[in-house]
Amino acid sequence: MDLGTVALAAGVIGFLRYWALPQIRKYFAGGVCKSTARLDGKTVVITGANTGIGKETAKDLALRGARVIIACRDIAKGEAAANEIRLETGNQAVLVRGLDLGNTASIRQFAEAFLKEEKNLHILINNAGVMMCPYSKTADGFEMQFGVNHLGHFLLTYLLIEALKQAARSRIINVSSLAHVFGRIKFHDLQSEQSYDGGLAYCQSKLANVLCTREMAKRLQGTRVTVNAVHPGYVHSELVRHSTLLSLVWRLFSFFIKTPKEGAQTSIYCAVAEELDSVSGVYFSDCHPAFVAPQGRNDKTAQELWDVSCKLLGIRWT
Image (cartoon, rainbow, N blue to C red; front, side, top):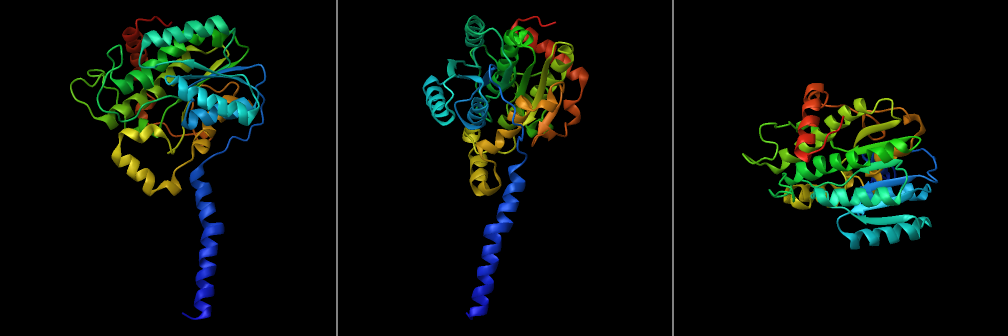
């Protein structure tokens, strides 16, 4: 090979490595929250913040001075994450509290303890979730993905809503997914007892997040509490652990998959951006309003799902 060819090859490799690939990677990384808002004196609850995008969200909000409560099932992992966040941010007000979203008794215990300890809640980020797991049921008999991703967070929000209303201004962020596009609410078989497909059950739960965000925004008008949903993007996380296929795809295309920090940006944006003070009922992706599938904009379905959810949980939310 002559020197000219070697030089050309080196130039092409250099171009790809130092300019083209970083530009492509930047595109797939998505939006970045540019807000410098401080959260001193504000209390935040983030479910599932012991790992992944929840942990990165907790770290960012702790850096802004918030009192951050990591609500998770695995206390040991939660404490490890909290210790790391305290060391990196210098914020000692990062606490861990037990919460199993697959058990309504645990959700009620968490809420009761929170309301005894805290006066107000300024930001609630319903982040935790399960994805494409083998068929199983929660402690209360709900299909696991519908029970955790939707009903668990629905009940938690209901139990904490008065603390949110008491804050001067407060925000609820529901972490949904682009997967809602493939979802359908199967009112005739919400618990997938007649047939079960892990992927479709996940899509149903994420559609439920979008629909209930829409309905909740209407019901919270005039309360100074806003609620929005987010799609974090395709992120390196433990969420795909139940799917061998997705785990393989994630590894093969890892260059195009977001890091947890990148995936957390839209949740952070919806939690702190000043321009969103009065924005409610919107679905965001990459820190911008995003497309919502027609079934996610169906008010009749949203209201019916709301009513059914209240009935399943034995609550009355007017």
